[in-house]
Image (cartoon, rainbow, N blue to C red; front, side, top):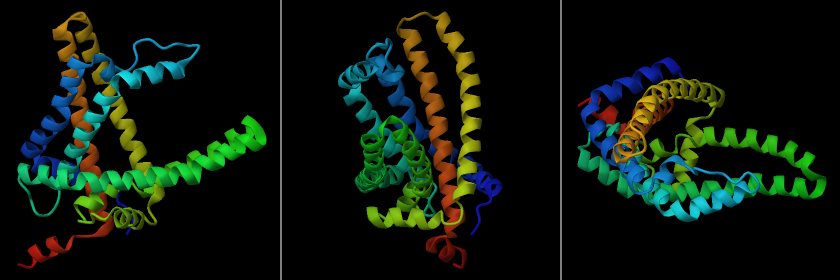
Length: 271
């Protein structure tokens, strides 16, 4: 089945509208509030390094993650549960908020396992060739192989972009089977998906830049006090929450379109 980007976007917005109250609750709990808390307890973790050592930028990043890594990890886990719960809201069984969160928690470990498998495979299949090219042919060969590896990485990420909906909406909790399901679902649509994601990314970046410019000026007027920190965190949390909801809805609609209606949906149709 060929992806219809217009229909996918229309279905995504329709799903958000139909579940807006439940979506707002989960996005608020797992994305909006954690962003505010992070801005208050670890401001540098929320904004990134404030000063970069131009002579040794790697040392700056190492110090940053040594100091803030635990907070970033905790927030990433909370965000992951929230995203998986949002996917559950867009499933056919119409769960409650509690059911969706429970599904997100149950799916977290299989989802992380699939991500780890993917990272390990990419490190071996793409990282090793780049390293060998640098060792054998110098930096020029490394750059050339690196470009090829980057193109391959983009392709692979597109192929596995439907991993989460395959696990939640498709009900495939086995990490290997879920990865295979995402690969099969995207078959014949890789370029369409690349264009779809690219256009969506541009739209989000433009809106975020305009929103950030307007709100940034307002926050700057408040100085660097606690109120400014909390307001800045709230605004960042709002953008992050909206972005998370849109991404989940788009991926859910895309998965539904490429895989067809679920068995449960078909059964309900003829009941």
